[in-house]
Image 1 (cartoon, helix red, strand yellow):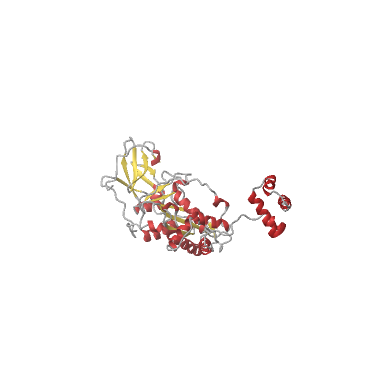
Image 2: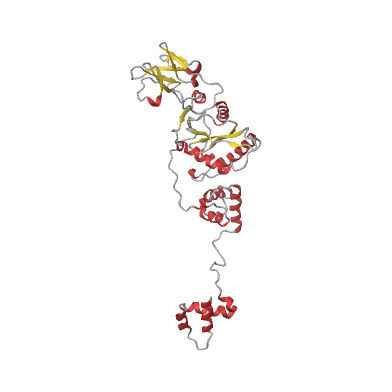
Length: 394
């Protein structure tokens, strides 16, 4: 400021050489003339630094369009620029929609992005295998457990059970369960099976009620029930949650978009889950689906749920034993423990290519190996031999 005042004072002298004066002060002639003109118009105040921000911005988003962006963001606080843009295109296909980067800039101007959301470079998500059709695989797990405000002392908690279709990312179910026990999960799955039919496979972890870490086999009453329905049960690798990566990512979205609010009781929790699931399946653009919605890619299974379980049958040549109390069978006068999950069920014994080793089958699943030499029963994962017996109906 003092430099500008000094320049203008000398430039006001009669017979001054303005070009030489500009060179002496190290400024261009246009700048010198600008300072003189400002001083003549507004005095010393005219020499103050002025904002370089343009008075108009022809490319700035129209106020009405910006308000549409902000209103949709208020409905879905966890959505970013790409999801908001895709949803705006669906809601108003005949109206202009800003680019995703422009929407992100709008959110930044209004302080609606946390620092983590502004990260310029994010590691791309890992490429995961996806089944080619709906209902080829469902991923299933509990999200954890949540407090209920109606039970502040912890007398009852909500255990959200999530079931996700691998192909379409369609949320088949988000169920507010009172516990994680076999009967509760079977009742919840029965409701889903009646609505959407039976999947070919279900992927779950090794915890209860999906699998058992102890005993000769990981089977539980729930997995036995699923096999009788014709649903193959698969377990993720222990201590590798990425095996169920889609459901794990779904849980992150569920926590961010539905679980921020307090849940009063199980009825209220289920109402919250139902409302959010409808948005997730039919409104929320999914990045893995090209910013389309899961409902666009899902169709119910053509395999209906049987209200009566079909019988377990084996070939006439199979050696069949009925599993007795606490999971024991008898073979050649010796008792073998095959697992309490099979109590009351028929299992089949068949020879293998290893002397003294029998394969133990339930339906068309090889569940264990029976060693007549050590009188032990071992998990299939510990037996590498080739089995010579295959059920006749396969």
